[in-house]
Amino acid sequence: MPWRLVEREVWLRATPSSIVVYADDEAVARHERRGAGLRSTLERHLPEGRAALRHRSRAYWEQRADQMSQDVGRFVREVFDAADVLSQLRKVQAIVTPLEKFPQERAQAACRRASHYGNLSYQGVRDILRRGLDFEQSPQSAAPAAWADAPPRFARDLRLQAASRLSSTGGDHGPH
Image (tube, rainbow, N blue to C red; front, side, top):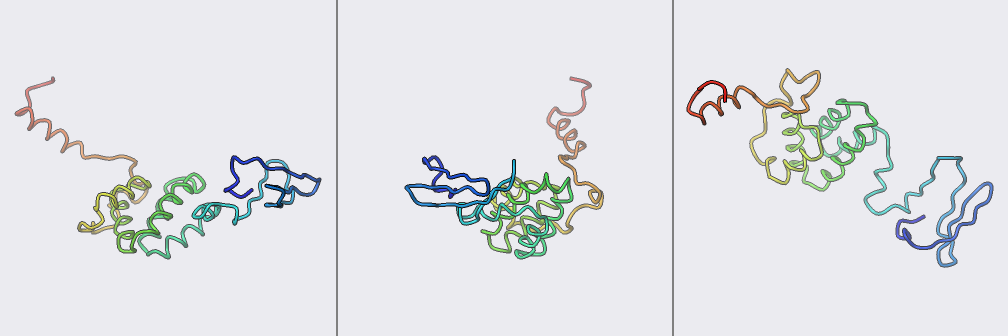
């Protein structure tokens, strides 16, 4: 039924071949039966901005990303390739949909930066945009060669961390 009728009382007329939804004595939806566990959703019944989330194909989301820019398209492919496509679909939807509201240059720069640092998450792209890091000088390469096979989920330079600890304690005085 249309999303605007959620939590309202409606009447259903079910026959062996179809279901009709009535609200205030008016037919608001008609669906053919599809079998147990299958759904039938009319796009016009979805809230504005949510209809595109029905699309489940990788090609659809790659095309939307490519329409923004080559960098955004490359980033979306990187996200898809990071794991099984179906498990990445919601992540890609969460990245592409908000990026479409930003100027193309910002979307490109945010994707380049996130890719460079191996951050393939919606939160990473969102934080780059929110903090204005996309305005900073862009990293030179798309990703370090060491990450070509599988970008790290989390990485930090432990040598720098150890050096920082040593300098803050005044040198190495043995185990603490």
